[in-house]
Amino acid sequence: MPPLDSNQTTPAVRTGLPQWTPVFLLLLLAAGCLLRITPLTAFHGVGFDENLYRAYVTMLNEKGIAAMPRIVEEYITTQQSLPSAILPPTRFLYIFFGHLWSSISGTAPLDALHDVSAAWSVLTLLLSSWFAWRLGGMRVCLGVTALMACAPIQIHMGQHALIDGFFAFWALLSLYLLWENLRAPKPNPLLATAFGTSLALMVMTKENSFFVFVGICGLIACAPFLGLGKIHRPLLFATVLGPAAGVGILVALCGGPENFMTVYLLLVEKAYTLQYAILTGDGPWYRYLVDLLLSSPLVLLLAVGAVFRLDKKEPAPLYLALFVGITYLIMCNIKYGMNLRYTNMWDMPLRCLAFGQMAWLSAKLPRHRDLALMAMVGLVCALELRNYATFFMEFPLYELVSEGLLRALKILKSP
Image (cartoon, one colour):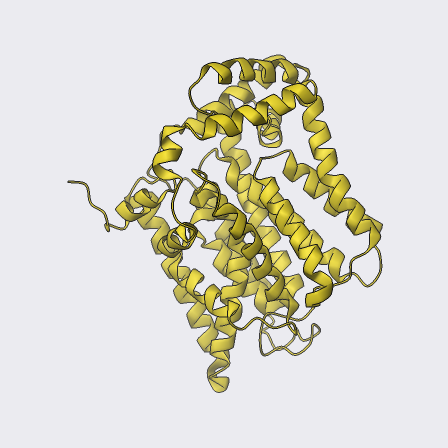
């Protein structure tokens, strides 16, 4: 697995770092976890989606999993009478974990969902660190961990009962397990099973799994031509059977295929009449680039710079960039369906690319390479934390739409 760090020549080159490096990595992880579990937000209300998730968890607490078909039927009846969309109970995995934690700990449904969001934001950080190490060794792991620890939207996802950070974990896990399957020298049924399971769980989390699935299929299709790895039969089976199993479980929870199809057809139909989505969820194809530039400017600029250096000799950055590119092409064309929250799954790939660009730039100063790299990573982390404070502590931002970002940055001002 060729590393992202331009000065490493083979995957085995992981030496040359101080002995205290593992301790520093643990400190970075601890700091990132602390940022996610410590209340740091100026918004203390209950969002529209949070209120609905709380209602679903309350229903499961009162009626149990066996009542899911009845809950789905109640949703269908309610949704048919409403002029616009509300989120469906088929976002089951997040709701189920909220119910499970609420039942075990005795916490209120909304608090349980907060805890689940914070826990999965922490898991995303840990997974990102491990994935980065597998891509490029300890030096890349340290840099990406530092950048992910300070990622403002990742921290925000840990502060509220929102599904998007939870979903990002399953999307990133699927991306990581696909990489491991592609790089395996021979078929590995265990790895393929883990990959298929992650796809199934992702499908049971949110409809956005379709975007990730298309990205996964695109990576598999391109792998032989771009040198990303080998495609084995177990991997292909897992790619098909995993999502199919996730859909099958959702169909059973809905009480049958008719209810399942009705839920999704209603969601699509009513989404186009949701006034908030009409006002805030549209825009040109570069809408996500604008929002990312507002929220994490240096990370985006560095990642874009890295795209211009992509080379088949370094499959890791090519793999990450291709995933972001394929999913971006779909997501930027969803009418009334764009929101910065949906880009959580790009945070780790973008920061890997950004770190690779910083490593390349620092190599221009060979005598002070490590010092320059540390300074650049530190500067980006400081700006990321400053952006978090601006958006979520000084300005009580909750929904991540362009207008809110612009107002938090005082580019737009209220009269």
